[in-house]
Figure 1 (cartoon, rainbow, N blue to C red):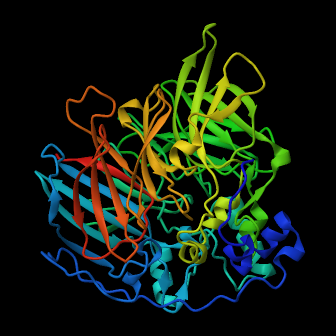
Figure 2: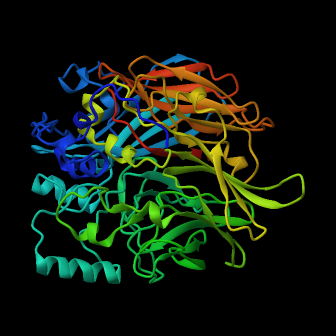
Length: 553
């Protein structure tokens, strides 16, 4: 495991709720009496400006919130739309809509969310039209969001938020809900991503099966909960389904008969069909699956030693690893399933790993003709510290300090010849990208195929969060980095130029949160990695997670 260089004592980085986690890692004496009590955080009011109102120009807001790095502050309005002035030149071929989803509201009344992943979903829309850019954003009106607004605090179980009025009888009811897939308290706050089905429906998603919400891609209004019609139940699924022209593929962990179901859904349908099932090889529960990759012929089913924990889901208290538990003794595995037959063709042990996001996977033969599957991911050196670094108090307090855990482009090689073990190594020297790595995208035409370029958020240290945009050349094993001092960029999303032949012929779109509370949308030339245009927003927007591109009809 790579060492963690800290610009402040590690005891100051985490909130008191995680003292048990630090005791586990560093001993009781290390954390005794070193955690300050939580301080009240300024309430940011919500203002609904109404649907469709056009704003041609809004001066930058000079509220107290916008004097801080906007990435970790609540969005100051529930809804806004307007045309933005362009600095530079947006390519005229870039016509369509970029949608980005992520946690955008962290303050509810006088209550402040604890973790980045607890924030309520905000969808941002950037509509490109022949060199013009019209922007808007709106809250996703999930049941969790509406209940929190009504009650003045979270009412559902979010990533780190738990119900405080739990007792024995309520836990029995919750257990029944978990067993039947009908839990009424797991969140539907769909803040993890947004994607377009090939039938045109646009869905926001989180890791709970209940947390799939359909929105209008033009107005961003919430249409309603997306209901599956198959009766498969389930509580959790991958937050990053794979959508192709022919189907949507997803993974559904089975918490009670440890394993995973691989599911597919046809265009125009709400019915998921089972491709196959993978049984876990280690541990009492399946490993956390936030995302997964596919190749032309296979689905890669990862089994991390960071595993779901049903008892943690039931507890009305903070736990060391939230709804998971870290069980390195249970080992890590990679399973390979045939897309067509559902047959598991390989289940191999791999070195311990932690990842949120897989980048790509493809089939490859070595010099002797032996077939394997190469799986690339943003790998955090098997260090669960990354979960706690994303606590909002830490993100706000340790700006500019070198507390970001090391990460790399982790490359697994999974043999398909019956060998019992696979390998994991760095695909490129982590120093090329500052030992920070997450939020990757590639040219989607290369998904499941051998590829050369990936685009991500890297690090220019010292930093407490990824603060660069990075283009990595996997053949030359080099990185090109873009950086704006004090700013935090979001996922660089690749859009291919129509008619392009070269893999990196296109642009990258990213939303940038500035240190003084401002923000702007950025367009980079993906080939040269140079800026071609930016459009300043009326105020900085919170850090977002993942997006999708909807081409102009």
